[in-house]
Image (cartoon, rainbow, N blue to C red; front, side, top):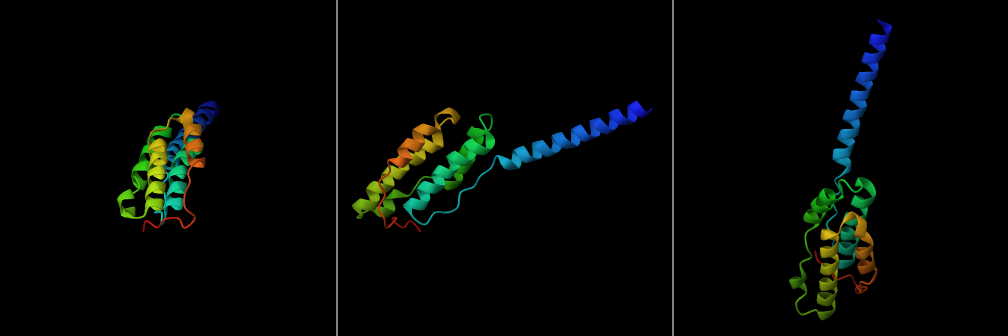
Length: 129
């Protein structure tokens, strides 16, 4: 009888642990970026989608996390910089970086990190909001 109770208690603990891990897995695989006010913040939020998902979800859930985060952020709206060549050029660079973070695989995040480090953004940040 004691063996049956111990076995039942172990099974119950195992099921509770599995449920907690599953719940944590579901909520832990979502990252939503903040709304950026300028291209510098936009770059950081796009980078955050890639790096957070790579660090927190692992290879099995990376694509889903990356897709949700990137979709939430959306591509930068470069036409708002029409007439401002400096910001338009910077926005187009950031857009290439965003496309990289939107399509990167778990094993190739370094490719986007290199692209990010090569961004030449104006110090004034180019306001987008």
